[in-house]
Image (cartoon, rainbow, N blue to C red; front, side, top):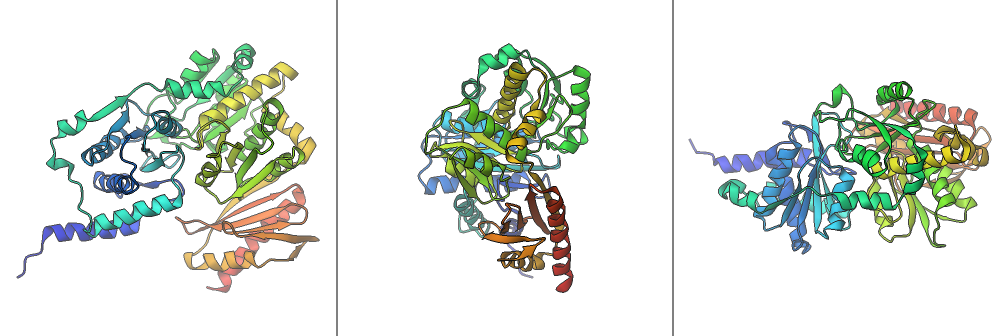
Length: 507
């Protein structure tokens, strides 16, 4: 009987695992811990990233590694650091869990070649993940992650030798890794973007829910020690299980924050997701404002209180509210529309001419900040807005301010529907909506079709529907918006029924 080479078995199994599971989505690779997200696979991904950097000659200045509060994140970060160190990189690792935006900031602050962030963001606690942040301090673009995936396949098929950190003295590897504990420059940068005196003099009372995430230390520190505010903190300890909840600052996950605000008589409640790149807010009235409204509200306020250049623009994703468009139009500001994913917004922000960039899923950044979504700057800007409202109007809150904006521009009703659809029917559905030129619905006529990401159908009254396929799940995501509440409901009904028919028609 012929003997089988164990190394070939290992390589073959790795190839299957890599090709089926290690894929970079819109913001990195995420997988279930101990199933796909293992130390073995993490080492392969770290090596593939390191190889990309070497191929592009980004291997001279060093790599920063941050990590969140998830199970084994610190150990995963150190393991990735050992791989990169063995490849000749200078490695810097955070002393404790830090938010993704802090990791992005450190790349620019230390003038490094890039960074790795160990996080699964707002995914359930059983997940972990890894984000690669290039030298510019924003999300990696598709062409970069594609090159990393090519490197992964080369490692899997054996055409590139796998790094073996266990053949090197462990202490020797660790001795080459520097530990970073000073993130004051990030805090100073944030504060420089705010009207600090306005906030300090407001005497606002704040309840903040860090959701047991990576901002558990830095966010309360900024509020209390840098801004001098009275605060109450929820879920401010490390808990890899996130208290049994999803670490996502959506309305359904912030019920405890709403209760605590009432008990504490707080002026505003602020929340952050697991890696603090997404934000959530509840005002004194107990009203949760969705990201579409928050981004619009922030833009409206920034234009009122800041000075901008004539050639400055606003950038949003194709799935984000057109209230931004209305505000831009009134102020003669150019608006840029990009595909879903903050990496496309970040790319536009690199020119330094973007007033605000936002996406409906809860990503926001502003001019003179990092080209990466940052929940902390979003929360702090909302805090400044609340201080402004208190100073100008007294008992006037964020939801009141939104109503004021609606009075000026109309009420924008929007939602997202996630519809289960067999994988083989996704293209049929996208094709149908892409062909609705001049289609009529309740006396509205389709005036524009966009295909920069799925199919976006824009009616002559400004109402719109975006239909796009999920790249990771058997879902069609449908984004719907209208300033007419009745037509908004008609659009939802139309989309639901049409997609059901298209699925049934081809069964």
